[in-house]
Image (cartoon, rainbow, N blue to C red):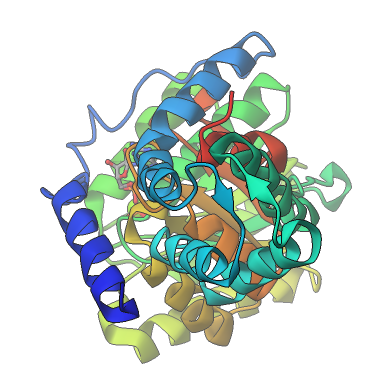
Length: 349
Ligand SMILES: Nc1nc2c(ncn2[C@@H]2O[C@H](COP(=O)(O)OP(=O)(O)O)[C@@H](O)[C@H]2O)c(=O)[nH]1
Ligand SMILES: [Mg+2]
């Protein structure tokens, strides 16, 4: 099959799978604040199940094509080429696809392979790409507070991620504060206030909508230092349609924080929505120009058919993937486990 036809076929499949587009609208604040649940170890098997269920669409997209390519056949050049195309179509990106195929060519070329063998080998190759970036966000309470600036395009899950992190830190007994720095969005401010009430995390909110985000962050850090808080999570706006204004605002926030603590913000988390596929890759490029991104959080892996993009992100940027989101509850945000993710993505237990 000509490359173009194959692409068209895969895109057709994707278009069908993606309609209607899974873009969850931010619910009204009351609903946007499910009761946070303690992040206990018991939650772990549940998380894995949700990760698997969540990735089911990504998995189906990849494995349907794999099944078509590898039903007991010799791994020749044509098969490798089809494998590469399948991986690219599953959002793993060209560079990762080439790297994986190179691994197959080196170790398995000319051999007869079954679909199961291909899956197991794929999981290993993918896991090797992901392992270096799977690094949890380490909070240093000694910074008193460790300042985490959270950036990203509107709707990716910044505010929700902040609320989840605050709930988890509170459950660990840390004094976690949240700053409602997306001051134009009343819903974001309320969303944090509701989570704050439920978790006992302090919320620093603007006095009126549209208040200066940098001034708010500055004041929040002053108070948090006085109170010797452990973590200060700073929400920000994500209006990417006005890129220069957003860049100005984010840089100003970072600058005023430094006036009190030269090392702040200690972490700059970029939140990406897995349902946006390759867009997420572009967003990393754009935000890296604006601020010094130190790590990624990938949300909405539940229900995305484009979870493979995590592999593309790892290969292209090498930035730590601190956590992944598979739902809206506090426990649905978890450190990123490369092996778990790779095996789930290719449909292995
Ligand atoms: N299914 C799912 N929804 C999520 C996840 N993370 C965030 N959301 C939802 O995505 C929507 C936008 O999130 P929000 O935090 O307001 O995004 P923000 O504009 O970046 O602050 C909300 O409805 C969230 O509940 C996730 O991991 N899974
Ligand atoms: Mg928000």
